[in-house]
Length: 528
Image (cartoon, rainbow, N blue to C red; front, side):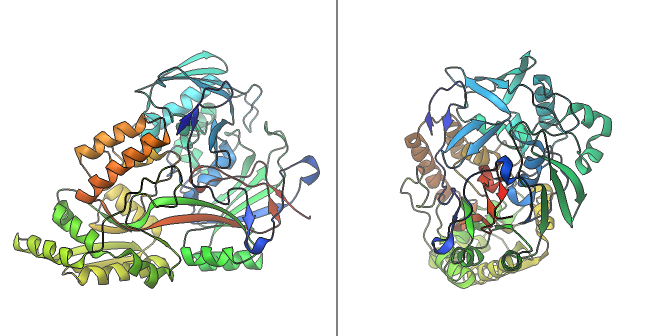
């Protein structure tokens, strides 16, 4: 994470895995190049997503691309944006963002003349009020933790806000590039109330698109704004739908039902890359594995069982059986293909003899040998769960498998109810926003720690990661984290995972930002 001061951008540059961020296609076939210009205005695009968002209010969003990130950003835009090609944060709705010397105070100036869809002018006071909504205890999503890094906000003039943080945070621009940086028109929110606003936030955003239709479980339709502050918006109609399964989604792209598809299954991604399709991938460390609930009421509160599960799960066996060898198999926290962050630390080894020994010790201490494994009912997750069940039973576990629930239901059981022993899950750590992602899940004091995980050594490492200012510092810290996780595991990792925004050659100008989220403000349809 290299730093520089700039009057027109954040001071933080993060290294992120971005191979293919400049959109490329399989077999050497180039996709449409350039960006939106007035002569390219026109056309429509349909994108396939992983999950229909449960509302369109940035407050209350999970923040991930597959569950509404791209859709909500198209309506509201973000104060800052992460450019995966330059690997820098850049102003978007903001004009400048500048820190003090110790990165505890940041001053942001907004672009002049930015307006909401209803015509209201965007002001610094709106920014303050919008972020306060994220900070409210009523917000149970991860954006609250991001927003609470801000201790106070002072409106200096109609276009300037000063953020005083709760401590040094060189990567603070990340916060304003997430849901926290999607400013909502407070007058519309107040008039409608949050529940109705989430269903119909028309006129309340400054993004390139306005909502036309929100039919949960069916489709989301948006139309381009004629007066977007960022210039012409070429694609006139955006439609988002969810098709079950990666293979079905890829088939819909092939037939032209979809123009863009977010894929998160290695075999389908491998197929797409052999074809004439554009590719905008994001690599997630700790992307797929068996997450263990460490809460005191669970069998896996016993660290011996957590170590047994890690030793029992063979990443190569899962890769061969489930992914046909196409996954990035690893037990490590950081995959070796992660530039700027990989420290050379390998993960724990597959060791079924050690696993059996630890299982027997736990049984002799009074545990009955039974453990519950939760997975959603997508075909690939079912196969993962079956593979993991076999590996665990091979070392003496009795596994009760629950794999008949939808992804949304599993999300609820893990994130809200925390009602599980084990779950096939991906914590999903990218370089961009690394501290924020890890801290909310692994800090013992975090309300978003769904895993009941608590280790003072991890808390200390996370505190150091927040203030790191160089790649070398980050590498040293994540190496320490690997040692902690070997001794006190929270996930039996079996793969780093890619998501890929695959698209047809008729769509150009797509921009990839944080967490697989796409920006459509510069996109266009070629050859109309």
